[in-house]
Length: 478
Image (cartoon, rainbow, N blue to C red; front, side, top):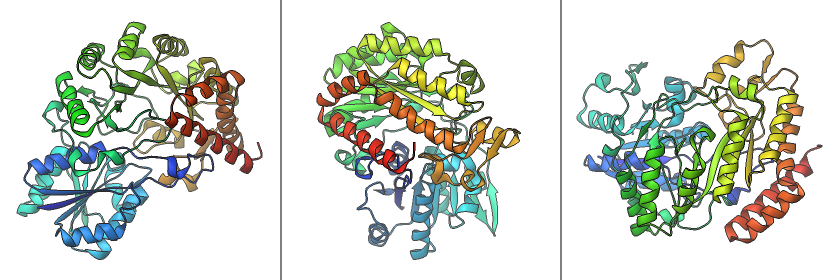
């Protein structure tokens, strides 16, 4: 069959405190890439159009459907991008009403058949891991067989919605083929300015899932079960990216890259031996690093590590079920700095249980840790998260009904709920002052100027941050 896969464009961040639109960047959508390759190996002709790039318009999509005689369209979307994905669905159905549309991605995993309420034009939903499910669904459609035995899908029949059983997770990730990189121009993918150092760039995921159960997490597709790829399988993909596509920097997008210490030690030794000039960054948890490991990662090319700190108050961390303490945060940041690795820290304001006092502690904690980069966000109740279920039941929580189900409000400075002694005005002011307080201290300004002058992309990133602050300040009364 002739199959067209689409990836929804980035949502419009309406916050005045946001990255300049032309500097936001785009990274390769791995989920679509995996499914594309699985379908190709199943004997199908696959075309991929990434709508993150503005030149991939609806006219391009419609022309492709006609010229390549497309039989099925598959669309993938995250929750913040869901409205743009619905827009793609409606366009296809308007111009090709008989064409089957399969809809998948993290947003489907989170809300499943509720998608039909938001976008009734969708024909099939794929929830959970998409590789085996999509392959079986396409075969079933091709052979006009019964859909009832295809696990991991929802569909409409005679006006009624049917939801089949969940498909078991793929046990061995090494059995999944590498993404269909050849269907895209990898040279076009550039992350958000300031988040990379050299090009060409690629992103990889070496594991799926996370064993921790933070109440704010909306990644339910992998059900708190962590599975990992073998070191040989990972190095094989890196070899393709380096030798075939000239990649010089990699971002490992695992939730907790260092969860299995032994595996990362083997991977680092392999990188040192085979790709001494390759640089990379990753994300981890403060309770899964140590100084010796970080020093090895540095020798293997790691220049940056991101930690989800979330709060500077231990009681709030306990309520969030984060599984860490502020003392562990201090040690992990200290060790990374000693190893010569840049530290990126991530914080949330208006966490469950937060008060003005605990938010102030978080802001002060960011100054104490003094990471090279700090990212502050306002807590949003993601669909599928436990936080979203808890908040409406609490007496001291007020829900903003206008924003609660507005998925485009999941990014930016929107406040979808308030609690305790917090109000919307205070939270937004804290959001601004947290960023201002971290970056505009004299010692941090001097350090970041030195960093920015060392690399043209970091310089542009610093300019974008400064512009955003000035723009935000001009529009706000704080």
